[in-house]
Length: 127
Image (cartoon, rainbow, N blue to C red; front, side):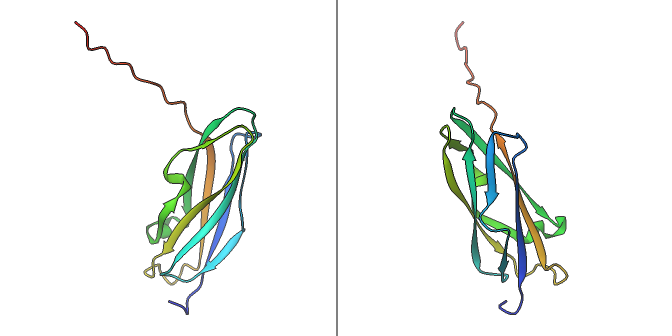
């Protein structure tokens, strides 16, 4: 619907202070329901050692969640970073045209966490 505009506010947090620099490329974007859009975030590992991050998304208002569809997202998989590495992360999304007309602003937020260490499970199949 080219006549309807929805503002997508982009926010980010890195709860582990001093471990990450993490921010959206733009604070907000204007979209029309229906087409595919892309938003970019910048992330940098501030430590010297390699680490894997996991981004956890949130949508507000809560009733808009079902109308915001991510087709590709850096939040879908853990993101490995070398020590000091910085890179751009992307999310591609569609705002469903069925979004209630009373909602003209959504907030897409991400919190960047260190991913828990994957513990190797050793199986004993002996007698």
